[in-house]
Structures are given as C-alpha cells and as structure tokens.
Image (tube, rainbow, N blue to C red; front, side):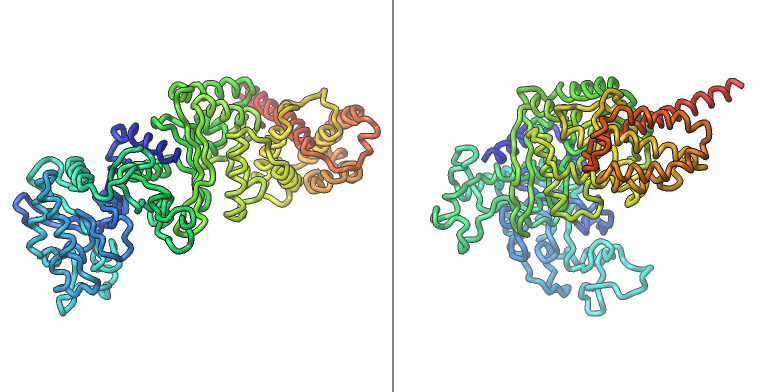
Length: 619
C-alpha cells in the first residue's frame, strides 16, 4: 500500500501548484483526457452559434468528467457526463443514419441528474437545454462541419477529390465516431467547459456526493465511496494495462484466500483517482521509458530530482546550444558538488524520494517490478557516489554538439556501447534494471557487463571511429567503477607497473606512431587497431607482429621516431621479464593504459597546434 499512499500524498502536495494550462497537467478527480474531434459553441440562450473540426493534435486533447463505468468502458453504455461521441449526445443520431447503438437517453438522464443536484452549474444547464432539442447533427451538417450523402446519412468516408477533403475527415476517419466538446459564451470569461475549474469542481462535488459503495478504504482507514474499477492509460494514451484489477473471479485472482475481491483490497474512489492521476502525470513529466517498462523517481513535494539515467554532463548542466567542456578532475569535483548542493536545497533528510519501476507482463496487467523509498539526502548521496566512481574522460557528440567531460556515462550510452544499438527490448530492460540497482542500491557493477564492454572496445574495426571512441571511454569508466577500491587515475600513471597497464601503453605508442605518418589523422585503421582484439587475448605474441609492422612507419618518420622508440624501450624496461612474456589475456586495465597514454599524445598535439596558431597570429 506504500505506493498508493505516496502517490496520494504527492497529488495533495502538488495539485494546487500545477499550471493547468500545461500540456501535461495533474488531472482533477473523476476526470480523464481524451481526444475531441469537434468543438461546438452555444450561447447563453442554448442556441447553436458555430462549430469547427479539431485537426491539431494538441488542440484535440480534452479534459472531461467521467464516471467509474465510463472511464473503463470498451463498447458498453457507460456515458461520459459532459462530452462524448455523437451516439451518446446527439438526439438525431439515428435520423442521420447512425449504425451504432444509441445511448442518448442514458446520457441525458445522467446530465439531468447533475443539473438538478445542489451542485449543478449554470453552463451545464445551458448545454442540457440545447441538447434536449435533439438537433446537434442537423446543426453541424448545416454549418458544413459534418457531411451527408444523397440520403441525408452521414458519410462514412470521403470519396471526393483529395484536395477538397473536409477537415472532419482529417480529424476522424468516420464522422459517426466524432467526439464532441462544447463552449458556452456570454456567461463569463471562460467559455470552454473543459477548461473551466468551476465546472470541474461542480462535477467532483456532485459525483462524490452520490455515496455509492460505501466501505472501508485500506489506504486511508476511512469509510468512504469505494470502487473495484480503477483507471487505465497509465503509461501512455491507449495503454490498457491496469495496476489494480479484480475482474477475474474464475482463475484464482483472489479465490482460495478470500471469498470476494473486496476482502483482498478495498480502495476509495477518490484515493484511486488521485494516486493514478499523480502517477500518469509523473510518468509524462519525468518517467524513463525502455520498451514498455517505465522507470520513475520523484519527490512527494514535486522537488527537483536528478535524472537517474543521465550522464554527468547533463547532471552538471549541459547546454545543448554550445560546446560543453570539463578538462580537469578538480573542475569536475567542484561542479559535481555544486550540482548536488543545488538539488539538496529542496531534497534534505526530511524529504522523501520514491523510486518505482513498472512493466506489463500481459496486455491488461501492470506490475511494480521495483519499489524503494529513500530520504532525500541519502538519494543524492547515492547519485553523487555513482557519478564520482563510474568515472572517465569522455568526448563525443550529443544532439549535434561536442561534449568533453569527466564523469559517468548515461545508462542508455552504456547499454549501446556494451551490447550495440540492436539490443533486444527485453535484454535492454534487464540491463537497465541492473544498472539502476548499482546506482541506487550501491551494488557492485556486474562482471559480465564489464567484460562485454572491454571486449567491444577491443574491436575498433567493427565500429565507426566515433562509435569506438565512445565505447572505449565508456569501457574505461565501467572498469574503473568495477575496480572501485583500486581507483585508477585518468592521468597517465608513470608509477603503475602492472603488466596489463604497460601493454596498453605500448599499444597506444604503436597506434600513435602510425597515425603520425598519415596525411589525415585517423584516415584508416592502424595496425594496432586491427590487431587490438588479438592483442587483448595474446599480448606477447601479438605485440611481436605489431612491432614488425611498425618498422616502415618508424622509418618514414625519420629522426622524429627516436623519441617514440625511446618511449617504447622505457615502457619495456618497466616490465618484469616474466610478465612481459606472459601471453595470457589482458584485463580491462590495458584499456586504461591505452587511453591514458593516447590522451597524453593528443594533449601534446593540441598544445602544439595552439602554439602554432599563436605564433601565426603574432606574426
């Protein structure tokens, strides 16, 4: 029950703070969102004024009152209380050739009951008086919003010239299925009934006052109006999976332990509505969707929360409009602390952060795969720990802009680097969940993920150069995280004489020597890159082949090669003789040595270019 109570608490804390004009708004109780196809305007005298077809997707989005039955209806007679399809609200539906069952009487009786209650609203009464005339379709046809054939029946499809297609056929495929909403002008400033908060409050008070199915709510402990039918459309519009359902009384959903579904669970209608509406709002606002699986982290007071699957660049305020650069570990540490401090202004030990993972094992059922509550300061501490331990130097493009930063890669980037972009949906969800546990439970990084990352980064010829560069730095970050207790430096460590690290340095020198002889840097794979996968498996034997293939490039460099030859000899001297001749596979540490040595070379080249540019400017 904890998740229902937390969502209910979030709704109560946030409802008054939400801008109701936003695309993603927190819905009122007993309301839902559907797409309307027609908007009708009537005046204070209940007279038809005008109408229009709604074509724009955002314009179609309509908040409307609903009942328990109407919200969960499939094709049954559950009429929405205010806006609905023509078969419900048009008295002349049959006259104009409507083929579906006509529910006009049910709709009008329900609307009349609302109007005659103590919570009735003047605008709703005006609408009721208009619909009582039974001329809605006639008015829409006369106004050229709906179109008929020669028998005065609504056209099911448009057969005329394509360039003359009426707007209604761009809004809905079949006119008879049109969903209609209303405006009432001449009463007050807010004419659209779907945007009028007074109309919304009127319906909520009316519906909750009916007092049907009074029982004990397990969430609040109060005797109140309860329900067995709970909302759907939770993850996205059209989503039929429900979190709470008890309509299966024959396949042992609750039988054997309870005689009736209400003995297993009883939730008040108001709590169910608030909890589900808060969940929908949070998913649209900050949920992370992987296939059909949703990862959600939120604060119950709508606090600003770090995005859990983002990389460090995003956490530190990456701006998509410019190049993002963090060059030093000191700058990284300072900015990380500053970012965490910014979040901690709202998230302290008194705040509650909820982590939730939802997935649908079947079409109609939604399950909670993961649920955890943390104090705000502890949550931020775990986020900071992840970004400061799964750390390496990265440089790649994001949305067309270059980012150079020190820190942790994003979860999705890790998955693509380790398993490729064609990873299956179920596999991707499983890996995402394991990474989430590493961050939020501080579990060790799984060794199979680290090994796969090292294996992929050791095969540069299988990827585009930019993909390999990204995979390489991510593999280094993951190995560094895996060996968190050793904590390797990103800067070249001249005192680290581990066999694997030294072999990685040798490979970087060979790669650099060959690159120096190209007309354009990295114009083709070097011998070191082509042999890299074999080198990781049998370094001593493969290094002999690489060294032999390196001779022509050393000759081409001439005297320039002397310094690099001396560097190779220097690295050789740091090996223990038995370690150097050991031909067993290398660990991921060799990638750290390769990347660090390579970075030193590239840093030197950049500095040389900067000095050359400064000299040219001075001249």
